[in-house]
Each structure stands twice: as C-alpha cells, then as structure tokens.
Image (cartoon, rainbow, N blue to C red; front, side, top):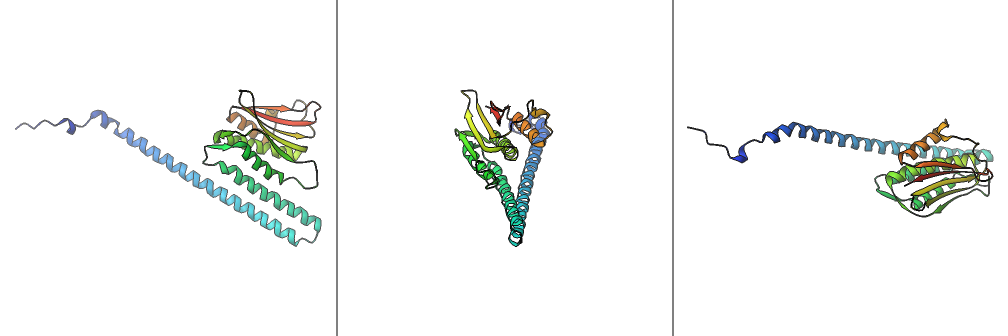
Length: 236
C-alpha cells in the first residue's frame, strides 16, 4: 500500500532547516554578548564603589589627623587636603551621574561641576580667584556630554594649577555652525608655538583624544597681550 502524501504543513522546509544552525549560533552569540556586558557593568559598579570607599577612608584619616595635630599650620594643611579629597569623590559621583541617561542639561551640569572645583581653590590665597559659568543652556546627548565633561574637567584642573585670577567656563552657539565650549583663565599665557599634539602630558593627550571622539576641534587663544589662556572646543 502506497504511503499517503504528506500535507504541506508536515513537509520540512529545506530553506528553514538550512538556516537553523546559523540562527542558533547567532542567538547564542547574542546571549554571550549580553552576559559580557552585564558582567562588565557589575564590575564597573564594584570598582566605582571601592574607589569611593577608599577616598572616604582617606578623608576620614586626614580629618582625624588634623584634629589631633598640635601644630596649627600642619592641622590646617591636613584639613585642606581632606576637603580636596572629598571634592574629588564628589566630582567622581557627578561625572558618573550621566551613566544610563540619554541626554544632559549641560549648563546645569557645568554649574555643578564648577561648584565642586571651586572647593579646590585655597581660601585667602588669591581673593580674586573664582570660577564662573557663562552662556546658554542646551540639552546634549550623553554620548557628547560625557566626553565634554571630561574635557572641561581636565582643562579646569590645568587652569587651577597654572593660571591666576578668574576662570571662566563658557558654552555658546556659533551662528548655525554648532556649539563651542571654552575654559579661560587669567595669568601667564602658554608659550608661543605651544603644540598640544606634541605635549607629553597625559592630560593634554586625553583632551585631544576626547575632542577627536566627538568630531570636534581644539583651539587655543592667548589674548591680545598674552595675558590669558583659553582653550575652546568647537563641536556640533
């Protein structure tokens, strides 16, 4: 007796079966990728947690030492060091506040960032020294905002270390050509012919790498009388 013909629904699809191994492999690779990403996120969170705990421990030890130090000048220096380490911890939290967000109100972020950096200025050392934020508010994608935040952070560190007087951070539009953010400080200008690409400092290398990452352009201005240094990043 001849076998009854199979119905179409019972007939295996050669095309479907030929793709089964590839589809199974792709699904496995996707699961493995998601697992790696998840483990990396947990690892990053653990590293951040340990770093903040370590910074807090340093703050506690410095504060304790300052309270038990009999020499008033030494106690003052220890207390200032404790405050600076605490500021570093706050800056770390602030920079990581963008994690998982799609966009950031960048001028508001700059206000918070500069407020933390202002705490690193030594009171009484230079009464005219302060950090101000100028310009317009704008919502930036986090993919641009995070590199810019790191750029501004590095330039502020340099301005505090090498500059004098007022430090201005400005965010402004460029008449339909995108945006510009600048960090300007009074004081001695950079040497004539200074080439950031030739700098051996890790900080400037980081700035250049981040500027390239966002497709921006770094410009340097020394003022009309070589009495200031301004770093500007142009971007869209």
